[in-house]
Image (cartoon, rainbow, N blue to C red; front, side):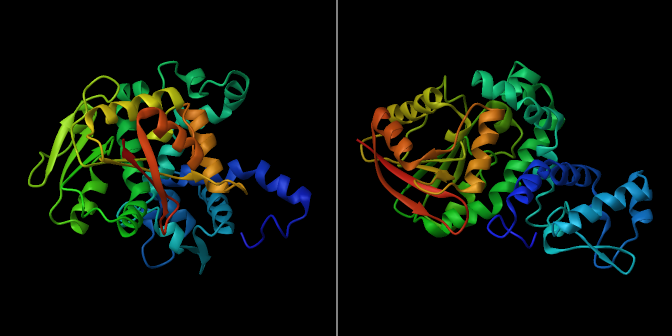
Length: 333
């Protein structure tokens, strides 16, 4: 939108935030239906799009007009064409965000925000009111949704990984352990920047089993960081892992790393950092997502410093990246 909170009337700010869920839900539906995949370089009429996905043309048209008002798709010669943003909803785009939009529209996620009052009243994740087993057990029991979730995490990390590798020098570390690193996308990018490094991906057994066999400079290690010993390494990276957990569990993860790490080993927490002064809308949004879904949180540098200290590390620096992530570096003492 062209207007901002600094130029809108106060009642319009409230109206826009109140109804923000409408645009979000429209995006989830359009992403789930794969509409963007049906549009290439030429505009496509709404009735043709609707015919391919089994939808009503007028209803689809109204959703696309709403998204168009937000810069996603645009009307062109009686049909709908891509904007730079809507192209990211194509499955084949190298920076596709379709899986991320689908993930946020999964019933277990979307319905959790409908139960946000449960979190505010109890402090417990609202997702627990939808499924008491919690997110990770839920995904384990729903493999199709788990695949969407995994694809979404990979999609979300694409730009972030490049920004992290550009901002941090991995060359001093002969052995890098990526703890909870998904499919290993950060390690592979680090290898390109640090040709002499070797790496180890530590992930849950189900994640490791779904990956192609490890080879070359990359090794796989299946385990649970709350239960199993972690490997020895010169540097440990945790990209959007610690924020999944409350303080007690986050501290347990860091203590497990400290038990495996030699003095002088480096730990990198790569996440959005809560600013000390003015709120950051992106960070605060993610903070409430964590509050609602996992019981985790985004943290300030001071909060991470305290966790590091209690786990046996000393925070050394906070490094910004060209993206939304920051790199918080600490050293084992």
